Length: 184
Ligand code: ITT
Picture 1: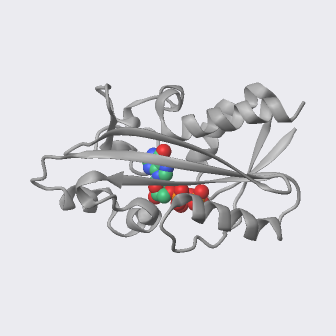
Picture 2 (picture 1 turned 30 degrees about the horizontal axis):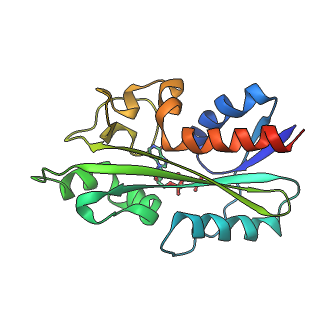
C-alpha cells in the first residue's frame, strides 16, 4: 500500500521509509504546508494539522511533529523548535547554553495518522546538548544532540543507528506495529 507523509523534511521521509518499507508500505513525500498552531503540546499541533489536512487531502496519510526540549531552558525550544531552528539555528542554541553545565535535553516525536480518524504515536529519546556541532549526517539539531549512553551525536550515526534509538524511531515502531495489526 502507499501512504502519504505530509512533510517538507526529506530527512524525516528517509527515516520513515526504513521502518515502513519492510512492511510493504510505500511512503510518498507530499510537501503540502499545513498550519502549525501555537499550542502547549506537540500532540495538539499534530492533531490540528491532521484534521485540517483531512479536509484537503485524499486517502490515508500521516505527519510528524517533533521538538527538542532542553531541561535548563524549561523545555525550550519544544513546540517552537522549527521556528527556532530557522531563526537562532544550532549556533543560537549553543550560545544560549554557553557556560551552562546541565545540558540534558530530549527529543520528542508525535506521528499523527489519518484514516478517517486520528491515531497518535509518540516517541522520546534522552540525551545532552554538545558544546559544538559534531557530524554531518541527519538533519536539524542532530549535530548537537548526543543520546544518553552513546559516544556519538545523531549526526555521526547512520539512519539505521539513529532509528534504533531515536524519538522518531520509537514513534515509527509504534506506528508500524499498529499498521501491522490493523491493515490485515
Ligand atoms: P515538517 O513540519 O514539514 O514535517 P520540520 O522540519 O519543520 O518539517 P518539525 O516542525 O517537526 O519539522 O521539526 C521541528 C524542528 O526540529 C525542525 O527544525 C527540525 O529540523 C528539528 N527536528 C525534528 N526532528 C529532528 C531530528 O530527528 N533530529 C534533529 N532535528 C530534528
